[in-house]
Each structure stands twice: as C-alpha cells, then as structure tokens.
Image 1 (cartoon, rainbow, N blue to C red):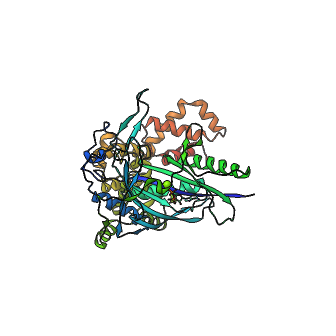
Image 2: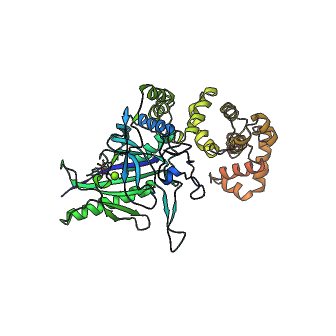
Image 3: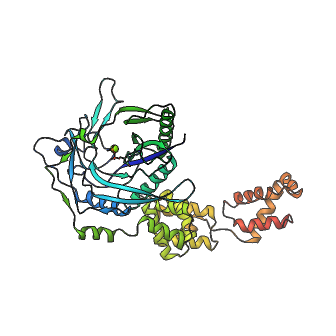
Length: 473
Ligand code: ADP
Ligand code: MG
C-alpha cells in the first residue's frame, strides 16, 4: 500500500523591535540573565500590558510580504499553561481573531515546478522565558530576558508534501522576513524556529491522518532530518497495522530521531479567553496603506527584476536578497555604474564579507569607481580583493589608494617579458617539460611571474607572452 505525507509548519519569528511586546524592557539578545525584565514581564499583580505599536507594524509588514489579508480587528487572548519560564501562568497570544489571514508563498517542488503553499494565518504573541539546565547539577535556572519578546507565528495549511519542500518553504520565508526588516531570523539565537506537523495517509485518501507535532526545530538541516525520520516512523506503524497517536515530539540532533514529549494537548486545555487587559487591536486603512507604501518593492518583485531585467541567476539573486543591506548596496551602485552582472559579482563575492561590520564605510559611488578601474585594467582581480578590503573601512579615493599600496597592474610587455625570461631561466626543468608539451606548466610560469611582480601583473598579458615564447597557440 502506498502512503503519502502531509505536512503543515508553524514558524515563530522574533520581531525586530527595541522593546518588548507589552513592556518597555529592552529586546536585546545576549544580555546578562534577568537584566531585561520589568514588572510586566514578571507578571506582578496590578500591572497592565501596553501594546508596542512598532511590533504591530512589523507584524503587518510580515502579513503584506506574504500576501495575507490584514484583519482590521484582531484580539489578544490568554493561553494558559504552567511552566517555570512563564511567571503569569498564561501567554498572551492571538487565537480566533488573528492579525492576518489567508496568505500564499510560492516555492519550487522537487521537480522544479512552482507550488503554492497557503498560509492559514499570522498571529502575534509574546515569547516565554528560558530555562537553563546545564549550569547546576541541582537546579534549573530561569532567565526571563526573553519573556515578553514579540513574536509572530506563521501557520501554513497542510500543503507541504515532503522534507525538501518544507526546507524550501522555510528558506524562502526566512529571506522574505529578513528582506522586509521584520526579523533578523537568526537561527542560532533562536529567533526563527519551526514546529513541524506531520501525518501520513493512503495516497488519494481525502481525509487527513493523525498528526504528530515536532516542536522547536532550529536549523534547516534538523527540519529535514526530523521530517524524514517522522515520515518513516509513521509509515512503518501504519504498515504494521498500528496507529499513529496524536502527540508532541522532540527531535534529538545526535541520534537524528524524534521521541515523544507529551500527548497532544487540545485547544480547550489552554482555556483560551480574550485578555481583559487589552482592547481589541483595531487598525485603520490609513495605517496599512502607509506601511504598504513604505514597504519598497516586495522580495518577490525584487527577485523578478534581478532575474528578468538584469539577467542575474536565481542563486545570485537569492544571495543579494538574503541581506537587505547587500541588495540596497547593489541597487545603489547601479545608479553609478549600470552593469548589473559585474556589480553583482563583486557584491556577492567581496562586499558580502564586510557589509555587516560596524566599520563598513564604502559608499556605492566609490565602489562603482573601483569597478571601473578594474574593468579598465588598471588593477587585476587579486589586487582588487585587497583593495576592497581596505576600501570597506576607509572609503578612500580609489586612485590614491592604488598608488599608495602600489597595486597598479603591470601591463607593459617589455617589462613583463624581462620577468618571464628571468623565471624561465631559473626553472630549467619546468622549461624543458613545457617544451615537451606539458601545457599545464603555463600556469606554473604565470604563478612565478605573479610572485615576482607581487601579484600586479596583468594575467591576460603574461598568459599571451608565455604562450608566444613557447609557440603555443
Ligand atoms: P493545533 O491546534 O493542533 O496546533 P492547527 O489546526 O492549528 O492544529 O494546525 C497546526 C498546523 O498543523 C498547521 O500548520 C496545519 O496545517 C497542520 N496540520 C493540521 N492537521 C494536520 C494533519 N493531519 N497533518 C499534517 N499537518 C496538519
Ligand atoms: Mg500547534
């Protein structure tokens, strides 16, 4: 009997705000434990939450970026459960009236065909604190810095059919959120994490099977492994005439297996009810329009310009768009030098290394000037790399820097011929082998000439000269 997998993903992504969702505490990662904590985050009696407008704006932007309908009215609800990292005893979330609904995200399936993944909803909620188990043998520690950090949860319809599609979906979603400046989506810092819901059914069966939910997977690699393991596990159960039970499971990265954490709770276990401390979140058309207009071209539009107008490959376009700063730098450079391919090549191979550093000060106009210098043959690629590293922090005048670093490319045939004669003389063995037809030694001599000229020789010119000397066409 043939089975097929059905997968739905829930992604939690932290919003890029200065402060938390309902308090004025800092939303910074990596601070000393329990330093970004206020009476609101602690849930002390008598305090009241105040909604962070910036977080709402970012959640709306996320909704717009994946073509959701933004709901003019949404409500916050209390989701009750007990856990030591949740001092209030409930999490403020959205339940039956989420901020955004009915979006879509386009991915490529295994055969390279476009596939639409429907987004069920995006809702806002606060994060919980964090338990730390490995500091003491006797106790677990709790760090409440994360308590109250703003999150969006993005929930798909069960439209995903295998582990690869799940990973494509997550990568695309992550790029879109980063590009829209909604979230850093830094997986190591846990601000982009995924719960995977998986079930199996007979091919063609209209009913969904019983699902297991794997919680908090925080890398693409683990998502793939966890889903593959789970599909296999459930398929075997069904083949043996056993049943899949609805439960919550965890993925263990060292054994590559999932294991049961608890039997699955149902919504009614949480005793959801509207939070009486928070009014319904009512939006105006004006606010949404303002965000729409501020929101540049979306990731998808930009991607299509890069590919169709500039003829940049899909992979390179993805690299440019994986970092908002990078794609902006690329766009801005094109204003001064309209050569998308050249600009792209150096942006994704060199600029990418430096652009996120706080010392980065190269401006696009100067970068364009640098590329022209390179194109005109004044410097070669090697020197270019050295130069970019310096320019990235100094933004000096390109010509002055070339002179002061003595990087000007040497193209004079007379001078290069002298150097070539010299290296041929000092390597008689290689000389004879090349004379005997061992053509790869051309590169050897090019390397020697480069060494002699401290990397400044024009590679095209020396290649031609060496071949001429050995009568190679
Ligand atoms: P829950 O209330 O258990 O969290 P939801 O209905 O909110 O369940 O769905 C959570 C996620 O699980 C969604 O992404 C949804 O598409 C997915 N899902 C629901 N039922 C199934 C199923 N039978 N198999 C796989 N995924 C499912
Ligand atoms: Mg769930």
